[in-house]
Image (cartoon, helix red, strand yellow):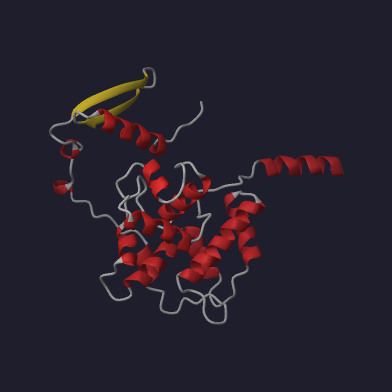
Length: 249
């Protein structure tokens, strides 16, 4: 293979790498916590995402810094997967009800991300090497070097914020082994007699509004809602713009 062919293959390979990712945080845990604290302090948990963004100092919900912080907050398990509602983990950090509850919440946030947890274990009693961690992230996630570097720095800052770096600069998991169990989602126990049906979840005053997207494939969107006002309709529109995953076909 000549040098020209090698360059073409390298260029082709680099084009396939992503310069952003939502698989792991691109901002650190303390930055995500700061955003969630603002949401909580300003009572924005149930607000439309545009209002949440503006309340946090951003002009739009699609602003890159806001989007990355919100994505990180969700990956760390601090806000719900939709909307801006705080999770139990976030409340455990801000208002712990058990001893060391705030520390447990931070450790759980780290352990709750598999790549973070694996990297943490591989560096136990070692000083985290940002460049090596960046290389590992780049290979695991097929992201660019620049993106991987940002993610690696965010990892180190997150681990430090969670109190997992000792006075010598090495990662220390002393006293944190039990958190590995806490961070994992509980195993669901299915009780058929108590499991709610779809009908049970629909309010009695709601009406069914179906929208057929494709008659051939029988793709349909169904909304159950009570009578709404014009103001509420605008809020729903803003919410849909943030929540729905839109694919070009």
